[in-house]
Amino acid sequence: MPKTFLQGLFFTIVMAFIMVYAMICYNIALSTGGMTNQVFLMAFGEMKIMWPVAIILEMTIVEKLSGMLAGRVINENMAPIAIIVIRSSMIVCLMCPIMSFIATLLFKNAGSEIIAVWLQTCVFNFPMALCWQIFFAGPLGRLIFRNCMKLVPTAEVVTE
Image 1: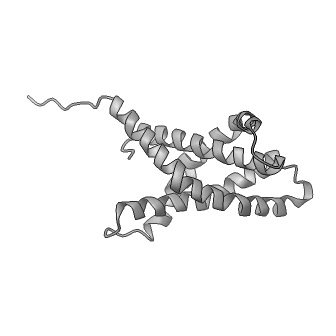
Image 2: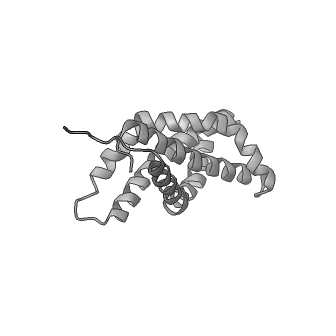
Image 3: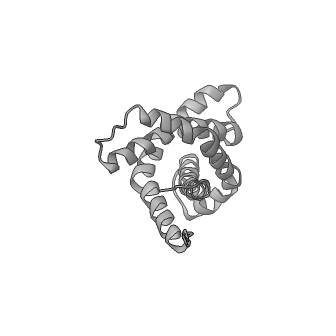
């Protein structure tokens, strides 16, 4: 997993793309009555806004806060997969309401019903975001990260 700031940034960019794109497709499909091939293209319109927002939120607020929350549950005797699931779940618990709120403001035309529409959006998004993160996006993002890091040469320490 990421060990430097640049590795963390790369991992965040990859994970944010996978999560945001899928969640935008999901929300467009909900609002249009179902999944079609057109949804995959329509999602790129919202990606221009939501992907950078997700990266900034993750790097500035969510990463640290989710780590603190996960740290209250994680202990050294846990299996690595349990630690991954807990950390991923904490990220979803924070990102889902925040991103749902931003999407509600920008794309839902909620008007005076903004709180109700935001809560409904959270309720619809949370199960999808949690399952997508744990079963698909997380494993795919870690696979991409590991394979890309194999391509990057590491600096060797020369001692004389």
